[in-house]
Length: 549
Image 1 (cartoon, one colour):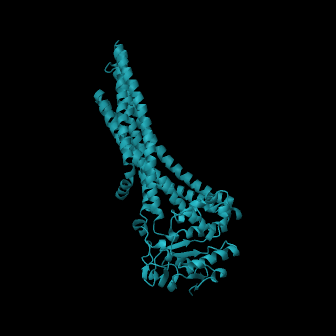
Image 2 (spheres, rainbow, N blue to C red):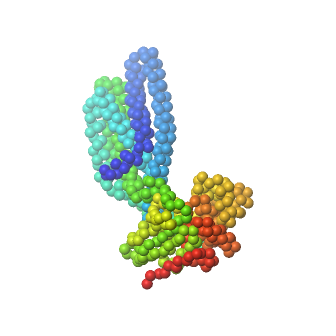
Image 3 (tube, rainbow, N blue to C red):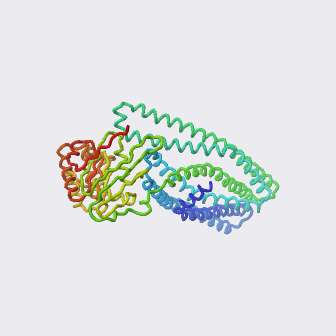
C-alpha cells in the first residue's frame, strides 16, 4: 500500500495544479450552497412573517446573483478540469510510453501489446481522474459535511447529532465485502486487457483468419471473453447493489426522521417555515457527502488496481541509452565486429543456442551468416544489437586502432533492417525520416534511388504518398525496398540485414546487392543473415552455423 501511494504521489506531479484548483473551486461552491440555504430561509421567513418588501427584494437580488455565480463557477470548473486533465494524462502517458519503448528487451516473456495499450489508455485515465478529481472531491466532501453539521447544530443540535451518528452504521454495514470487490475489479481489468489483446491480434492477422476460414472461431474466442467479463461485471454490480441498498435505507430513514421532527417543531411553533425548509436542505447537505464517500470507495479500489498495473510497466528496467544517450564508437575509420568465445542460452530449461562461437567480421567487408532454422542466427543479431548480453565471451567493435564492447549506447553504429514489412502508417517521407529526422529531400531521394525505389518519385504525391499500417497500399517488395532506403539515411558504420531481399525480384535484388558491395568497398561493414545463394555470391566471407548434436 505504501509503495503504491509513493508511486502515485510522484506520478501525480503533473496534475497537482488541477487538484488544487478543483479543491478551491469545490470549497467555494460548497460555501455558495450554504449561502443559498441561508438566503432561502431568510426569504421565506420575510415573506411569511413581515411586510418588508424592500428587504424581500434585496434578498431576492442576492439569491439571483448567487445562483448566477454558482452556474459560472461550475462552468469554469468543468472547463479547467477538461483542459488540465488532458494535459496531465498526456504527460503521464508519454512518460510511461517512453519507459516501455526504452525498457530492456524481454524476448518471449514480453507483455502482449494489447495489454500494454490497455494499461496506457484505461489505467492512466483512471489514476489521473483519482488525483485531479476524486481526491479534491474528498476534501470538499469533508468540508461540506462539517459545514452542514455546524449549520444544522446552530438550529437544532439534537437533529444534527442524530443525522451524523446513524449514517456511519449504514456505511460500515455496506462495506463488509470491501476486499472482495477489489479482487473483482482487478479481474475485470485483466479480462478487459485480454479482450483488447485478442481483438488486436485477430485484426492484425485477419488474412490468416480468412484463409483458414476461422472467422466464426475468432468471433467465438471473443464471445467467450465477453461472457467472462459479463459475469465479473455482474458480480461487481450485485455487490454495489447490496451496498447502495443499505446506504439508501439509512438515508431514507434519516430523511424521514428529520422531516417528521421538523413538522413536529413547526406544529409546536418552535421553528419558522424558513427553518423547516433549511432543515430539509441541510439534511441533504449532510447526506450528499456520505453518498459521495460511498461512491469514492469503488473509485479508490479501481485506482489502486490501475496503480498496481502501471507500476508493473514503470518498474520495467530501462536500457542505459534511455538514461545516458547514444554514443559513437570512439574509433575513426571503418569498424568491424568480433564474437570471441560467445555462449548463450535463453533459460536454464532450454538448450544452448551458441557455444564458444568465435567469428570476425572484418572492417569494410561483405559478410553473410547462413544456417538452418534454430542454429542461432537471430540470437547473434540480438547480441550484436545488445538486446541481450553474452553469458560468456564478448562481442566487440574493432579495427586497427582498438576494441570497444558492444553496448546499448553504441547501438547507433549498427543499422538494422529486419525481415518483412516494417513500415509505419503515414507518408513515405515520415518513414524515411524515422531513419534520420534531419534528412533533406535530396538525401531521401538519393536513398530511394540506392534501394531501387524510383517508383516513389513517379507517384502523384511522391514522398508524401500515404501508406497504411504495415505498408498497406504497397507491395511487399516495395515496402522492403523503402525499409532499405530508410536504413541508408541512418549513418551507422555496420549494416545488419535480415533476409531483406526475400521479396525482391532477381533483377532488383542484383542491383541492390551490387550497390551494397560498393558500400563495403568504401568502408561500410555489411552483415547479411540469409540462406539465398544469390546473396552468398557477393560475400567476402560466409559463416555457416550448425545445429548442435
